[in-house]
Image 1 (cartoon, rainbow, N blue to C red):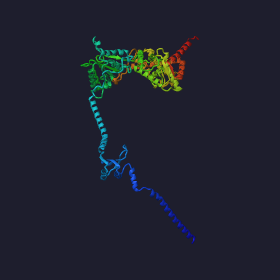
Image 2: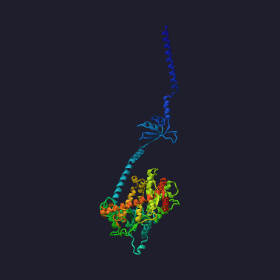
Image 3: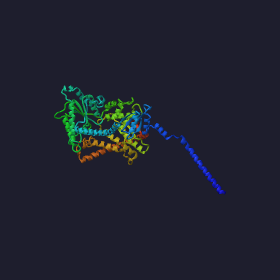
Length: 633
């Protein structure tokens, strides 16, 4: 046999042997499945035992074996709830999905005596459906009720459009008594009579006296007019109506008059009573004033008010208190006796009044014992009660910001500066601009100190406040009701001291716009000296009145009371007064150039010089200069 034959025979034998090995291996792999596997019937039985959601077939088998104790059939949901024997009491029932026809299953239940019953979830489903529908219906019903309510309110508002909007209190508990009002003793005395009449009217009627029907409180804003009305209401203990003058006037004709009638009708029903009308100038301005004053609705309201206060019927037991800061625009018929019989002036408080006001507002604040309220009162001339209350409040806020336990003099000074001049700004760095501002402010203060008719300087500072880059404060030693001609000229001269210092030090080409506000004040004071106060060569003539705006109830044209020739003389006199004062300011600064430079250096270094130190430096240097002049040569 050749080699090729041998190789082919060997190859055939090896392939047959590999096939037999593969068949034997496959048979060995199938043996565990044959001997270890579970028969199909056994698997089905085990599945019925372990399954929680029973199948329909398993339920039948368990019924046949007697393992079912109770069944609830729900035909609506096609579900059977099965309770098995031996099941724990708290275990939930097994659920089985039913067929359309369950005759065989029911027969099995009957055969094995299984307790079964039919239950229906139709009622619960109906309840759930009803709740779902209500979730949509209830918002719709609520929306409809809201629209109905709004329409009802609109109709009621339309019916009550002419009713009075006055706030009514049977006993006005304002929390304010006369002891809480200070600084206006004369006004308090007049108003205490009103309270006494309401409480004890026989004291006045016994001697034939008649209480005023109306009391008009007149004064600048912030002096305490409304506070006095609150004190009257708190003291009187009678029905109290309060309303603002602007609440009478509406865009519809006749509404204001209707509200006035309704107010007095309610007041008559509750007499004796008080009616307080705040800002009465909103409704009581002059009638027939032309452009700016010809509002028919306002005039009708005023006419009705005049009639109700003192008309054909009259009102007994009703006292009207009104407040305004513009008595010049009120109608003359409103101010006559029988309507507002008494006019009480509530002006800015004097030194004693300011001290009493500060005591009232300091009651609920922690003030350091070193703080002198009298010193604060002396430093704040012209402050109203509202200004003083704001002053102490700002000081308290600043104290809390600095984490102090009591208000000290430092906080009081800072609060005064803030109320007078505004919020403090960032100090300027050393530069030509800072030195120029220092010359300007020292010029004001130095000229004012050298003039004996001028008020003493309180403080000079380079710290910006508001729109001012530097400030100089002057404080009068005493209250000044009247101002003399020399005092006015001293004020003009000191006001021009800033511009004069700029010109002396830097020259005319380098003067700045810093004196623009000073020049406005100077021109106004000089013109008033000429035209109103008769302090010029034109003689004791009043050539101009205070400006009266047309839209505040005045005439359209403001005609002048003098000729063009007098107008030219007025301009000439104003210019002469200002120029003479400017020359005087430059002379004073040139004569005291040394002290000017010393004060400017000190101010540029410290940024603030108090008035006492400033006056001491000026006095020492002036005395030294006078001594040098007195030495014989």
